[in-house]
Length: 449
Image 1 (cartoon, rainbow, N blue to C red):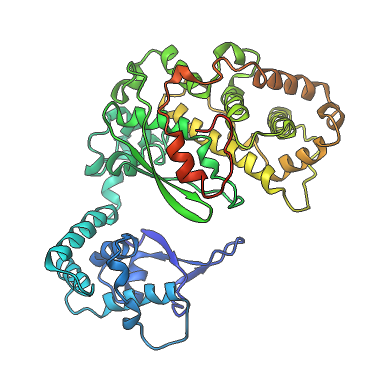
Image 2: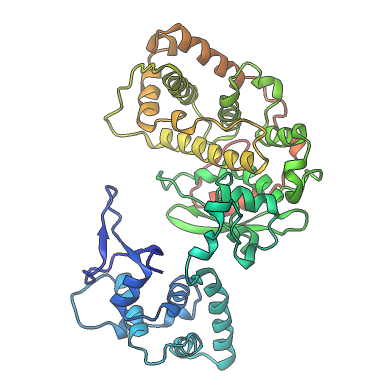
């Protein structure tokens, strides 16, 4: 267990743990389970209880005042003090069994009947399943490095097809695609980017892409997925219906499916026809298709300078990768425009979700060289320059202009299905606009997800 690690919020009086202070100044503690348990005198088997008591957002559990168990010491913020009080309570317990600790924790909830306590205990037990630690990680990797044997997945993923397990083990599929939170709990915690809180979450634009991904993972009758996103600075849970219109494709037989069908699903999801991409280098077809999708669906509507900047940086990265051509690499030093950054955030969210869909479909579109597609500071610099100059005035290079023109022509092709009716997407617009957009009072765009 010494190799198992994690992070917890900064506890100022704990000097035994290694302090991690990244440049963004989010202070936390990097710990191993052995060191953590030794520091707080907690039995390792109680760690799932600790995690569940912190995580489970039950109105009655909030009434427990863990501050009363806080040892004397310097003043600290309420949330930190409450967390350390819980750790102190767990460390001081004489009985170390899971069930006794659960009973003792629920007994601390004031004014609660025995039936209600039993309900909370069951909720905590269910939550604890997500935090159960194996006695050793070694059995999971036994025979894999020497024999290529696919490691045994946790029991909760036993229904996952063999090809998915093999792809996951070989690194062809990421764990963020085969997300047991989706498969088991029908829940997806979305990545929140750094953006203006008065604008809607960038994840809204790429939601239709995720709906297709959910449909492939869960199949017909798989139920809704609860996405955890944000409104303003507050987290919000939204029920999303998977798109399951592609009856020819089943998760257990995706590698054997007709490649043309898999490509069609990917391109239809992005609202792009195959002919549109004919003049685009193969490994740039996915990011160009994503850019087409973003250009038509992002909101507020992207400015032409946003599109030009994205394509210019994409071309510069490609030429740099192929020939070492550097071009102008001057970066913007002044503060970023929040609205422009929000537009680029939406593009990145679309690229991430489309890339995951493409992987699950067994790469009907070639994987791009992701490291060369986007440079944040440079794309903002280009956008500033494009407010006064044309792309060909900024970069005077024939090879650059030729590739840039090909990509721009593909992106600005007429939308083959402006309403995307061919996808039969599950529309929850009214409900979601009210739930995710109403608080900000902003329009996500004429074609909001």
